[in-house]
Amino acid sequence: MKKLIQYLLISSLLGFISCEDYLDLTSPNNLNSANFYYEEDHAVQAVTSAYAPFIHELGFSCKYHFFFAALSDRGVHENSKWTTGTYTASDAEVADAYVLFNRGVYRSNLALEVIPGIEMDEDLKTRLLAEAHFLRAYYHFLLTIIYNEPPLLQEREPDFNKPVPNGKKEDIYNAIKSDLKFAIDILPETYQSQDVGRATKGAALALLGKTYLYQSSHLPDKPGWDSAKFYLNEVKRMAEENGIYGLIVPIGNDSLDYVYAYMCNFTPDDLVTPSGSYPSENNKESIFELQYSVHGWGQWEPGYQSNGQWLPQYFGPFGYKNLAPTRTYARDVFEKLSDHPAGLYHDPRRTVTIFASGDTIHWSSVALQYRQGDDALPLPWVSSKHTNGLISQGYGWKKYLEPAHYGQWEYFGDPNNIRLIRYSDVLLMLCEAEFHINGASGLALDCINQVRQRVGLNGLSAVELTKEAIIHERDVEFGFECLRFHDLVRWSMLPEPWVNINEYFPWFIKDKHEYLPIPIREINIMNGELKQNPGW
Image (cartoon, rainbow, N blue to C red; front, side, top):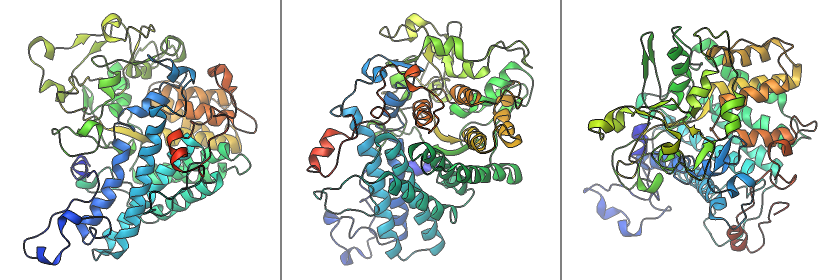
């Protein structure tokens, strides 16, 4: 789906008009959403543009991490308000995801409105509509776990001046589930290469399972453990019966095999050891992956009009370096080992997630196109050079940033895809749902032990599988993937909480900080119809 980015249009209102029939068309100077969508290519463009907010610089390309890696107890930002909860409803950053993901809802609704009336291949039309349902569900899911009860928009609102009230959380969750069930019945399991990255049946199943998992915390009177288990187990079945998904596992017993089997999920380059090759982007562990590329500045919508993403520019060893792992996370959380099959002394996920003294920075294949002489050589990672002076933790964020992509502004952004849903997440969510239903069952043990054994850690016994073990495994598996804050919040909201949230965030005020505030400018625009979240 790298090719898909080439079609991302800022307004979805650009098209090509043939010489033969231009006299029969509305003037191109007057194109709008009412008269633009009339042929198959336009239907494809309508849906493709609805993917764009995910990959925007204000979203997962960069700014999402300002909040949800910084708000995690595992990250420290140079600006203390992102790690102490002192942001406000007036902060521009608070509004970024709100505006961006609502734009995704709008574009999804627009596609659902215009595509049915286009004369085109019916199979393609049906698939595009299913993609739009998936995208609308995903944007609504993100909006509700971040902002609590944002507006529920089930159709495009052509009057931008019309006030829109908050949605009810139960209605939002029901709408998400309805959209995903529609998508599951239609979306293909896989795509041809030119469409890789579009929503699949597996992605819809995984997101539906995740929705029920979150619902069980956010709507505790309506637990969804059984449904979460069912839909997540369907993805596991696809992995085991069809081989569509699966963990990337070591193919040799060298220490690099265990590191690369995990690291390949966060790099644009295939990784090679003497044992063999570890495929990177769009491998079988990836269930929903954001597609980036580097082919120059253009009219595209991701970060600052570039087709690449911006994590290295803000967080990498040659960028601003304004987010780093805590010393506690680097030193104390990952398991120390004495019996690893490759002789490693700690969980190899630490090696992939964190830069530490003694590490080497390697250039990515794209960066090597631009580096020359000594700059092209691997460099030692040095805390005094490669961390922000305002962050005194002594470690750096490494995941997604090694191999390094240097010179963001000059070389059009990083082509490294961001994986939003990985198969290991499905396994650990399924383990969690099953644990709530049946405790340390065979299914729960199989799920968590697949994840542990992939990196050479011993499997857990039934006695060892506790809620603390599940919390720990998600902590080390998804470091700096922006899941930790949401995990801790939802666990704190259970009828019998798994965590005391103030042990992780001393600044956290219950019934306030579970969600970001609704941006104050949005409340003002809505003339009081849109209400602020409790506590703000």
